[in-house]
Image (cartoon, rainbow, N blue to C red; front, side, top):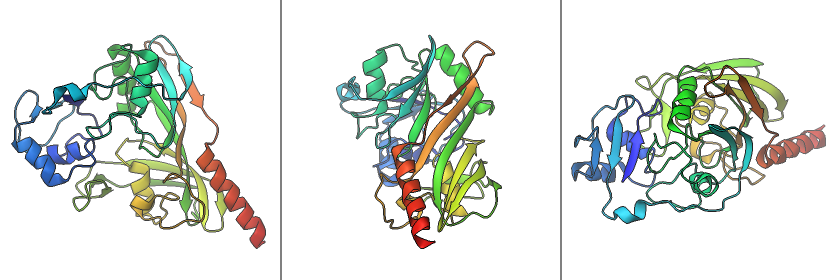
Length: 307
């Protein structure tokens, strides 16, 4: 059984569209069939696929082979960059999922967390997301807050909800951004033509991203982004919407590139938050990752050659 607590990323979505965020390899019709068969419950009741979810609703997904839902601890390398008795901040590598899905149950950050922390993780977000307070896409690297107990989980999640936790990202995007500072305020919803994608939608959820230009190159810009909301694929959708898709983000229209990386060149490099149950402000920052560094070096060489 998979248990999911509705957070702001899926609040007010249809049930079938919300499940697409977790069961990425299932078509919408397949998800509707699973719901219709009674294998999904919301707050203990069998719902319809069109049910609009609300914050803190409990979704339970039942599988025919319950035994296969158990997660296996694995010695998956990741750096712990901050830790206390209630939480940790870890650096998720690019190329691994934050948490398992029904189709990928090994090789994720959560499997590594179980190996390191065992049962000393929060369980508010269900069997497949122990300790996970917020997520990063598979090919996005960087900092994630991990809760070791439910009280710390609530404390940290509330800071994300009220925007007192600060999350900053590095990205390299296609084209030259002329502005030094820019705010994108566009609602984001699910792309009904492609369940793997999100899109700008008038009836989507409010989404705000602040941008600071760090350096301009010929045909590209290195930027810092600050999330004021936490929608699925928010940075990637917002940047594509202004014709500056994230470097190598083929899902959102970047196209071909001359230097190979694992999809989008995007890194969650800085976190600022209140330490659980105190007023102590914690700031955690990591250096540019290998993808960012490689592409910046490529752009520097290219610009110097063209001068």
